[in-house]
Amino acid sequence: MIVVLEPGCSLTHKAGIVRFLEGAGFRVQVSESDRGALVGVVGPGAEDLAERLRVMAGVKEVLPVAPPYPLVSREHRPERTRVRIDDVHFGSDEVVVIAGPCAVESEGQLMAAARAVAEGGGRMLRGGAFKPRSSPYGFQGLAEDGLKMLAAAREATGLKVVTEVVAPGDVDLVAGYADMLQVGARNMQNFRLLSAVGGQPRPVLLKRGMMATVEELLLAAEYVVSAGNPRVVLCERGIRTFEPSTRNTLDVSAVPVLRERTHLPIVVDPSHAAGLRELVPALARAGVAVGADGLIVEVHPDPEAALSDGRQSLTLSSFGSMMDELRRVASAVGRTMAAPHPLRRDRAAFLSRS
Ligand code: PEP
Ligand code: MN
Image 1 (cartoon, rainbow, N blue to C red):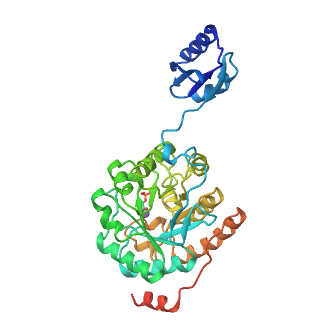
Image 2: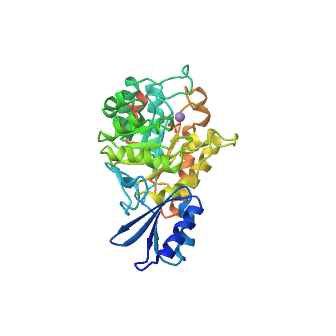
Image 3: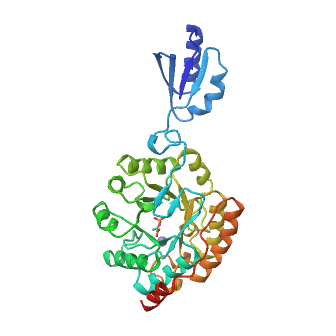
């Protein structure tokens, strides 16, 4: 925070201001500028003093310092950024729904999910080919074979594809198949990975780390943008709290907080927040109501048989009903959502063959 002093501020007043700030435990640096004398105030909680300082004799104005993430901050760019993938626009009036299985498991599984996503009004297909699993014995994904299946599902449905990249060395491979690269919660502070996805042109879906603050999420986004890629969409996916009844706690307030601090679009992931499929529609509705630009949801044709995150995956039919409810919420808050649309007959035939 910077305190600008009145041009004629007396030495006594200046000393009084400095004494007050140092007494409150802040580091203070006084300098002269063409605006007059400036007092720089450093230390946690400095902004809380602004109101008291504003009424002190000799003080002209109190300015917050720029946030440490200049490129993604609203100060840098007050108008909202739209991240476009052809006709899919994050940051528009439309709430964009991304859905699909946690992991790509087989062509049949992926195609069945993709068809339900497309017919239900989803705009993008998700599915991990590289899975960051907590256990080294968990299913790690089909790697390039999974990427090929995602590309085939895009061909069959017209849905754009987002998939996770877990290592800097895989970025070019994944970007060769996907329309958008996901950086997962566990990798939000993998700074080499952030720079690598920042050095290529595909848009990035950046998930909030399960123990990361909003500021840390914005600093992670700053890594990507400062490496040259401005096409970043942020994702709130629940944070770890003391509450064990859900897998994580959906931080609904992060959406309006982010909206205030950044021009980047924001999506909500109700699946990883809830961990339980029966809670997903309610959290998805909350996400739309609180102003998210999109949702990312896990769906599976046979959740009980899923190789990862089955307990939080919606069945294909419950995805359809959730979408109908979400459309009503979207319209109540002045947003739009894609209508359900049965696939063209040739595409449906192609899908049922696979
Ligand atoms: C996922 O999207 O399947 C995933 C692993 O998410 P997160 O990184 O948020 O845990
Ligand atoms: Mn998952």
